[in-house]
Image 1 (cartoon, rainbow, N blue to C red):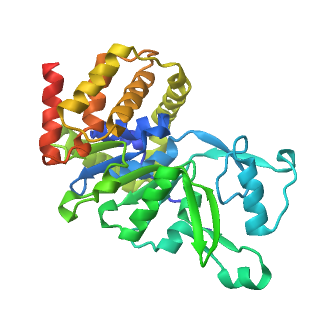
Image 2: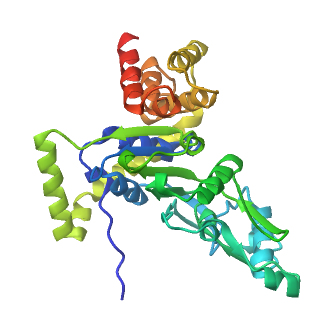
Length: 345
């Protein structure tokens, strides 16, 4: 019997606090539009994203629904999907069994074809029988979850276009020879990349709400802790995960509390001008940066147990939101400039 592979605990990761916080903020508030993690190899980028599975909140879904639809809000889509894909008529919400499970992390392989990502439609079946035959793709599985793309800068251009469309519209369309089928596809996009292996298209770069630049840990004590913990995990995965089970539960509980608190968070109008000041000072194009900074500041307040945004929330959100939105300088220089602006303010 195949055993489930144990994942290195999120709470056991040493250092990389900004990366971990950026991921947590996107769990608390999925409308932050994801995070891009840029850094050299061996800095726990992939480990951190895959480890999210253990601390993600729970959601309600229809049983055996490949489209991950929300029972309360997307029942009409569910009826259409079941009729289209399985030929089943679902008369009422009460007639469907629902289950509760954790939000999922769905990984998109670098070599994935467009059909694998979008899904496929059997045109021959449609023409012969007049029925749509759908094979849901990765974007169906990622709905209401986290779509993780390792080496996102190496994705095929066609796949990038599909991700951009789905991220913008919240809908995925499977289309072939005039026959089409659409389903909701709203996901939190998390990408990791090594800048040495190539850059990212500006259109996709701007779709990431937050961006974190990371590098290897320099503190000797922390580097030793990394070796010790990794060795302990490799030698006894079950025992190591059990050791970190309580901290993981505490983190998951704090995330749930922040999710509940976020709708109550307010911000004074004066602080909105502080946000625009940051964006204007570094020459951000458009208004997406301002909006994401506002959401990030409110999410930071909720994460810290506050119902009101303070200047410190805005200053820290600038470090996460602005560096990848400016094209005038290298990202590293922009990150330093944002930090300097914090010191001046």
